[in-house]
Length: 108
Image (cartoon, rainbow, N blue to C red; front, side, top):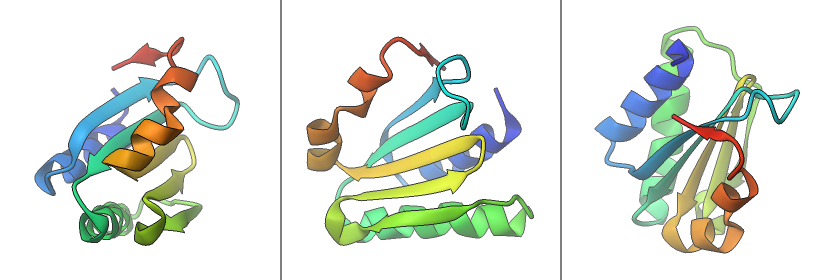
């Protein structure tokens, strides 16, 4: 697995994210190789997980493009170029059903 994906997954695990999934989308999209998905138990945790991922990327001098969304929206996306991180509330993740959209991709 990609070193950036491994790093992000470890940060999410260390900060108690739930239902972490890594999906290889390299054969389905030209703009990313992996989607990392996780759920948070509440609004505060959504923000804390996003901050922890960004802090670790910056600490390791790994570039990322931008962050979209807010904890209050139930979804934050971090674009780390070849890795797209999606941090959801449980309700928003269920509503969006991104796993279904990517279901033909390879889960890691």
